[in-house]
Structure formats: structure tokens, C-alpha cells
Amino acid sequence: EPPAALDHHAAEPASDSSALEPHAEERAFAHAVRIRPQYREAFRFAPGGAAAAVAYRLELAEGEHVRIEAEPPPLRRGGVAIELFEIADGSAPLTPHHLRLIARAEPGAHELEARVARGGEYVVRVQPAPGHEGLYRIAILSAVPVKESRGVLVFPIAGLDARAIRSGYGAPRDGGRRRHNGVDIFAPRGTPVLAVADGVVRDVSVSAVGGKVIWLEAEGGDVAYYYAHLDAQLVSVGARVRAGDVIGRVGNTGNARRASPHLHFGIYRRGRRVPIDPTPLVQTAVSTARPDAESFEGDVGALGSDARAVEADVPVRAAPAEDAAVVDTLAAGAIVKLLGATGRWYRVELPSGGIGFAPAARLELAQ
Picture 1 (tube, rainbow, N blue to C red):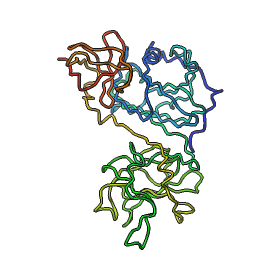
Picture 2 (picture 1 turned 135 degrees about the vertical axis):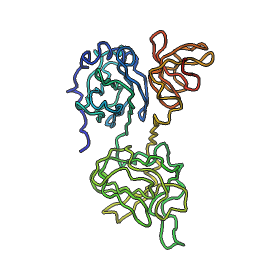
Picture 3 (picture 1 turned 30 degrees about the vertical axis):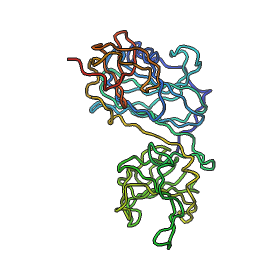
Picture 4 (picture 1 turned 180 degrees about the horizontal axis):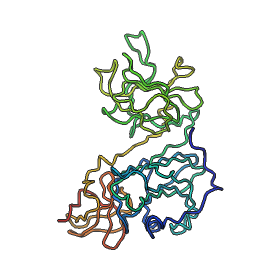
């Protein structure tokens, strides 16, 4: 079953994590970076200092579902704390005393899922126990509340929106002998295909027409979502999925072998027999980009090492975005420590002890 809405009246004060690493929690909160959901970062944890724990600050809507993953290095299973806090007083300094614990991962788990009961600012903290440090891949993913009647779904292909539709519902097929009972959304082969809503996978199969297909039944059972021409099916029958979960990859299997890779997406009522026009729903669907730490432009293996600025006036920003505030500027040859990597950015520790994000292309490993 989907996670129940969490009762904020039962929320606990932020716990004392000093058993994991003294003062690491406070330091992580003090340097919590503002992010948007669908965020991924490779982060190398190390005992003590800025690399002992990491925290992220984000806004969530009422009823929003959030999933936090912390994939550990090989042979380091278990021993990581993942917690979600609500900021009780947004105007106060971000310290454990101004946070309320909303959810905590089960012991030994490397992921946490929760659905927040009200909108506001939240903080995610990830911290391995002593002896479990190393390179982790962290993902903070979310989906807005799904209300099919209002046309609010997650767009079925990551990072795209309705502009990627090239063949609409009702278009003639086979010389007019049949009509197109869905929409075709074009994307590069292998692009992640997403669950548009919470539901249960009812069929994963291969057919001559649809190729590799997936049927996802929405919660309530009155609507089924049909995905066809997939290159890969990444779920099994009976799996419960959340809106925004990756369930497959774009391809051109079945009768689309001679076409460019695309997803055929359809919506059906009453046992898959009655197609309905998905156009209004996909036109208002929420685009859910899922950036991937593996596509980072720098060297993930360099995390934990020192790097230097290759030129003067390298900006260090408060978040990994060009429009984020500049917190410092590096002179040519200035040394920083590489803590994490996301997109085109390194998370760096400055000589002053501050934390920020610098463009990967403007840093090189210090010799």
C-alpha cells in the first residue's frame, strides 16, 4: 500500500545523532544546500569534518511523495541514517532544535519513502555510521499528488513534456481501417519511462504489435495505463510503483521496428477495453527530469581529493545552478576539496570551511 499521509502532530524533535559522528549533524544542517526534487549527487563520505554527513533543503507540496535513496559502496551494506525533517521555524537558524523528525529509514535500509501531510520546507539528512563511509549515490525524487480527475499526472518520459508528442490520439492507421488509441512520444533510445501515477503493474509481456509492453493499473482499478514499444521493461507483474518511478526504457520494439524510438502511451477504462483520449492528461502532466550522477561531467573517482582552479574568478555557488547565489570566488590555483558531484558541478569545501558548488570544467586535480 502507498505510504499513509504522515501526522505532523506526532512528529518528533530532531534526534541526537552524536553517536554517529559528534557535531556532524549540526555541521550538515548548517551547510544544507537548497535543491529541487529529482536531484542526484555522488558524495564521498569520510570521518569528521564536512564529509561526515550531508543535508539537503527542499520545498514539498501538501500530499507530495518523496523518495530518498543512498546507494552505498560495495561491501558497505547497512549502517546509513536517512531522515526527513520538517523545518518548524523557517526564520530561525537551521539547527536540530528547529526541526521536527517526520520519517526515518528502517535500520539497514538504503532508502526512505514518505508522503508529507502539509506543504512547507523540509530537510533530508544522510549520514553513514563509522566504518561505513565511502562513495554513495544519493537521489532525492518526488512526485506531486496524483489526481487523475484533475489531469495531474507525471509525464511518462523523464525530462520531456507534451511537446514531444508527434502522433496524436485518433490518427488513422492502416489506411483508415483503425485509429490510433494513444499518443506517440518520441525520445532517444534508453530514455527512462516513468509511472504516471501510483499503481500496480498488471502485465509485462511482448506482443507483435506493441513489442515490449507494460500495463499499469491505477490505484482504484478503474484506469489502466499502457506503455508500448519499450526497449527494456524494468518492473515485474504485481510490483507496486509510485508516480515518477522508472519502469522501462524508450525503444522501437513490435511494429515500430522501422520507426524512430518512441513510447506509445494509452489510457483505458474498464478492463482495457475502452480507450480514452490521453491528450488532456499528458498536456497537463508534470515534467519529471531525473538527472543521473553517472552522467556527471567531472571525475567521480576524484571525490575526496584536492583540486585547484584552472583560471581566475571561478564562482562558487550556493547550489548547483547558474542562477544560484555566489558564495565565494576562487583565484587561479586556489585549492578546494572535492566532496560531491552532480551534473556539471563539484560540491567543494573551501579553505575557509565553507561549502559550495564550482563548475567541474574550471577545476583540475591538484598534483
